Length: 146
Image 1: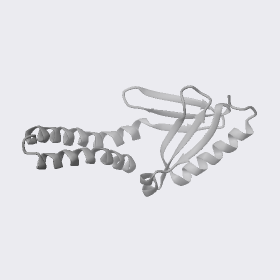
Image 2: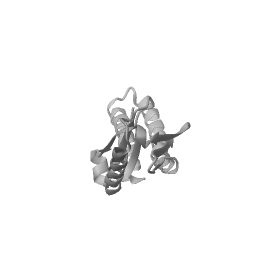
Image 3: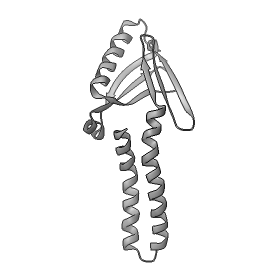
């Protein structure tokens, strides 16, 4: 949740900061800019508080010897199942913020029009373990995942 909170802050702070600077510098537009700043602070604050908790509550994943399962979404929640026989690649991504928090994202690409399944915010060691396990399991399944 700390990583998602940091992500939310990094999205909100530039908007709030930009509006605050503009309100300080532009006398003629100050009333409108202050109103926009108030909306950005209230809306951004709500986003920073709600988004990490919602993601923690809703986003789930599981891997078995048969499939990768992932749940995600806001208003429309989606439960995806990717049979391991359809998996084409398994990748790990670590952005600078994820590295700071010791986390990684695992991306499972399948032979599906729906695209990839992402598992966000995993502990880096766990992500490496998941990738290794999925890679070993998918290599043992005959076929070309198409």
